[in-house]
Length: 425
Image 1: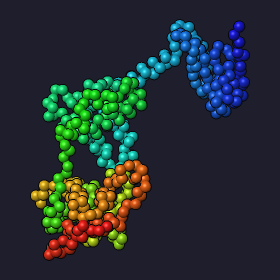
Image 2: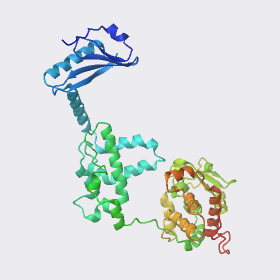
Image 3: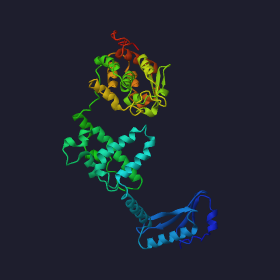
Image 4: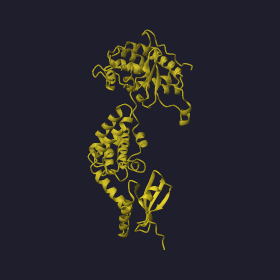
């Protein structure tokens, strides 16, 4: 005969603190599971209708009392007798509840919640704005009003390669970089919906093993449509460009001049603050939160850059070096681009970094890693190499940036350029 467990009291249950599994009687298979003094719970050991023996959790003790555990175990035993697996039944109820909730969560609402959660960890405020703009332009017209539970692969394909549009109008083939970023954003939002229980099926925006089988491979598209690089001023024309730029008035022109002298990105120069700059030591330290790679970057300042900064007026109540006279905040990138258009120069601010890089490669013998570090690019062919190369080569970069400033902005117009060409380093 099977051994019948003693019917234990609530007081007896309270006293059990030694790890183990203790039958408590009253209902066959009901046990108290003790992991430690602060972790105790109820388990029902039973054979399900399909013949499979399973342990069913009934809740933690003392939140669920002995009396409540016996009642829950009794109901579970009745369900098993009627051919119902109570564990699978509970899962089905939860899935139904999640599905009901998902009907009320649209993709647009899910995106808003996801962005709000992630925004504090994003550098600056640009990331959230870019996410919202791309979703508003491309994703919301197709799936914005749909429940996250109802979005299918067909909907995702329509965003990137609508079969009703000509190939020349399809996002995936005409704006690949934008499309790839957008796909990643849609995938992240739907992953969040799955994790939150608003969607129970797999992610239709995932790439590996899914969309990669339905959309053209990015590498193949790049061979057909090579990436268009930023327009830049030719090295042979940069000196005359700088001479003309110094004759242009306005904060935008001065910021563009500073950007060119330092070979920094537009956002880094436009966001330059007096508190980041030490004129006496000729150094500008850009904090990691304003850098693309998220790491602090030290910029050596040439004599020409120092002279420019000393002419910039400081605005009361603002730490910005290049303060917009219109918004009284940071200059927009359009202010710099407009300056170049007024000068009838077919280039963009970011292209000035390319000009510097070509000068360093073709007109000097400065090692590649020095020029790449000046541009705040990661150097080294492997993670191990980058781990050991912990210097930012500041002193060598300081000499290089002074040579570059002498080349593009000679102290006197009468000089042919005082850059130290093919410098021995």
